[in-house]
Length: 313
Image 1 (cartoon, rainbow, N blue to C red):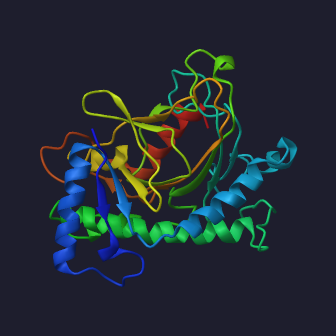
Image 2: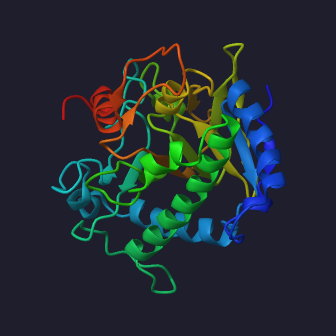
């Protein structure tokens, strides 16, 4: 299996709109990727390497702080959203049958009263400003991808756009920008079955992933894991479970993981993931008959998935 690449320049963030001809071309390319592989690399999206480098740099500055400086930002301590904040090493089990993942994370949801780390970039830009700006850029790209996906199914754009209208409103939409940091690890000292990120599928509609290095693997239809290389300037986009349910299994959500590095490899790894979710109250029903899944609200579905990864919340 090879993850396909698609030139997205015709509908990049630099463009106000897309022509019908280009929309049809993108639609056919994404349909091929999302029905057969579940993943695609988008090139020339308008999100620059400089933007990605800037947010990864300030995120790493946060992760490299002593633990007592990160503790006040722990996930679950913010009254406005349970998912915002820092996730310590081995706290999360994306595969509940394995030991805790060997990674740290910082989840960003936007709300005016959420507390932010005080670290600043070398240009004196704040953690909050950089993450907020990147969140909004990812939001705009996601809405464009969702519009193309609606065209794939020959349904109105609002079929997907309307249920995502409140992305960025933390009280009513669970869309999350997540910074991930995988510290150097000695694989021989890891627990049995432990990975940097356990094999899992994502929860919501789609995910945008920005990688700084290799390490991610994606499961093929033949049930084999294959490497998802780091392509400079590329955004790796995948279907998540709620979208597979929404499309009656037409688009496929597949499992993926990050393995431990080989013995002697002390490299760290970073990535930025933008997990796109419909509004909490959006009722997700299969887009055509016969329906394979019962209706569910996006918020209830997300909370159930969190309970599987973190235990009761």
